[in-house]
Length: 387
Image 1 (cartoon, rainbow, N blue to C red):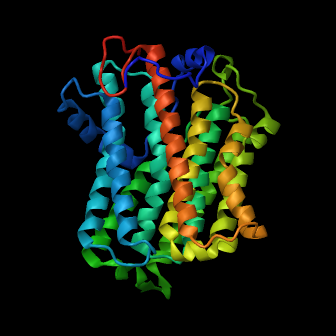
Image 2 (image 1 turned 120 degrees about the vertical axis):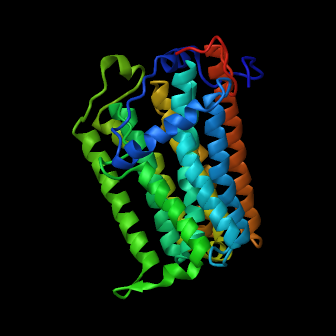
């Protein structure tokens, strides 16, 4: 992707100008982040200077998503055992993704190619992988489908609310001081590697009368709940309130912050009604396809919040709800039975193709707009790159 524009821009000039002034404020490192950082720095220093940071991000994204897709193909009902090499492959890939996700920023600073595009591209990929990786982990644990839906919703809401907090406070929380994104990815990797070595049956083992997989689910779900609760407290208490220079065209305040959560609530309710109640036959028959449909909707919704924050512009609730129209209609159709759908999996596949296509086109056009404005390329380092 270069600097040519082949279609009408998505981002207007003021949004691009405000994006160019974006400054990222992250959370402090956890103990595990601190432990990994020197090794990630050494690995970064071994890379050629021509390697673009976004290339590292993209490779990590592919390594994270592809194994999840392969596991879903091998276990479409999310309870069939997949080949053990595939679990190992997935565990190793997500571990590599963890380090590439840290190395891209170090490579950007090393080559002097830091730009808002890098942050946008990095966090945009993270929005997708966080929900999609849940499908992969659930194939390992073989939890009942109700638990899968709860886990997917909890993780997706947690990521979305974290982005919502950054929009309103300027701080993107990646951990609570002790446990965060790094620890979650390491747990994901360990689950896959242990499944490869010991088999899926290991998670059915009982400890004090409770199967290990339910212990893992309970701990993770409680962690998600506490993280979301903390996000709300910080936003409502005005924690780390935005500086005037960071407000841009945003409309802030208590009412606005709640209003911005309307699409999230609609997606959470409609997707769970579709999966667990009215479209239960589809979910029972094709849970992996239905799970990917929901995961990609969360990816798009959170990405829109991310872009609005970085461009310091108003988050369009109407635009986000409009995008959710197909899954809303699918839920309403399941309730009212306006149409009798004999091939529900075809509908689910059509929805998946719709959401992936819309997001891919949207991402391509946004990247083209940003590259054109900043005079840079996405996957190569140029002399025009702006710090």
